[in-house]
Length: 318
Image (cartoon, rainbow, N blue to C red):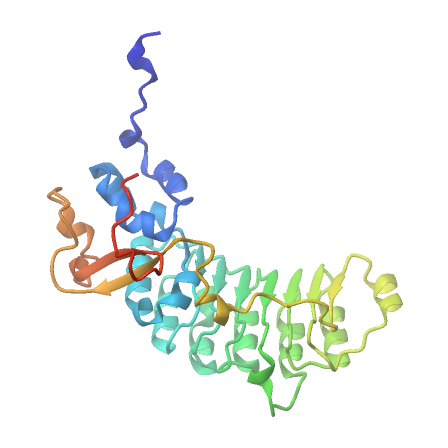
């Protein structure tokens, strides 16, 4: 075998193969490193194969002020092929409607801590007909109407996450309204999380009788629920129930996580400033950062650590 036979032409890989590979990289690497490697990689990063799954939930918790612009850019790049979207803290109904307009292929939708209301969800629920997993945790402005609308239109829904914070439910009545909406519109559920949701024993039993395929039910923090363990084992042998007793932390506090960078020595800051994105010498660099929103003004900078004496700098080249 000739010595040159071991050479790999990585720049000649087809776009869908590159998309699978780049899917293992972080958001910062995909947006700032990969486009500068070569023309074919930069072109692939602009196309839909790299953005069929968009998970910026952690980033959106840290940089909410730039969420709308970045999310619009990434969804537009998906070109209607978006299958998974995970983002926290949508600011208003406008962004929810924008997502709905591009949800034709969407299977997983996670929008915790978002600010859309019942009316906009009812209006656009039909656009999410392919969704199989839905996360509306900590969304305090939606309720029974939104859940009913999503349940009626998401015929393939098998997973729902509707966890709440105890303080968000203080003073609220009608504890079984949402339980009834789930029971009557989501019969194919296999995974249901309702930690700290206002619900009674009767509401849980209604869900159990209406969702025969249920395998996991999270009731941690639902203090009004009293279930007989023997009854559950005999009647629903495949069902695993968590709670209502909270024996450990339900989940890591995401609000605290926003200021906890112990897992990484660097974090991603987005500064929108006038000027060039960098010294990328490819003639296509202008269009690479355009994305219909003058994204040539988008500059991504990486700040390493928090030591004030350490200074700032770009990460080393790959």
